[in-house]
Amino acid sequence: MFLARVMGHGPPTDAREALAANLYEEQTGGISHTAPHPELFLRMMDACGYVRADFDAVTLLPAAAEYRAWLDAQTTQAPWWVGFAVTAIFVEGSANERADLATPPHAGPVDEAEIARAVAAHPLVRVHKIPADAMQLTRVHRTVEAGHRHDAWRIVERHATDADAAVLVGVLEDALARWLAYRDAVAEACGLVR
Image 1 (tube, rainbow, N blue to C red):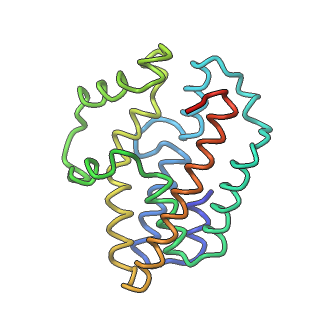
Image 2 (image 1 turned 180 degrees about the vertical axis):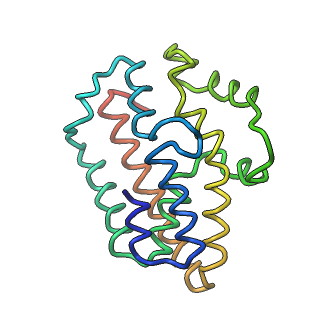
């Protein structure tokens, strides 16, 4: 939904193409030849023992509602390049961003051994003993997301002016602070303490 909103702002052609490819994968699993990503997430949650109906009507924690409202504003009210950076770089990014960007986006066949290692190292598998075959979303992210990561950075670097860059740094720092507050509130709700 966030990416579709950004596309609705009418960004330049290369940004629309990248957004369309990302949306196509997220909503259909068509690039990875799997299933829509929300379905892959629900399969992972099935393996964790959750009931799918639990995800139909969720009441957000206050910090989650605040973070979600902020994301909504960035993708509906801000210029397209702000919404694009927030969603395609920050939200879809990871702690492995630099390593992902160091790998060419379409470097040939997928390294199945590397994907198997990533799945085995995932906390749901390693700690919670979820079957590795329930982690198809992680497999898909390792297979196709590198291309989306490269596209996102290439487009922001191509279209953001020097003045835009200063704005983006501030927005992304704000995104990080809001995400950390959201994450800490979830941890607190789970009874975790520092």
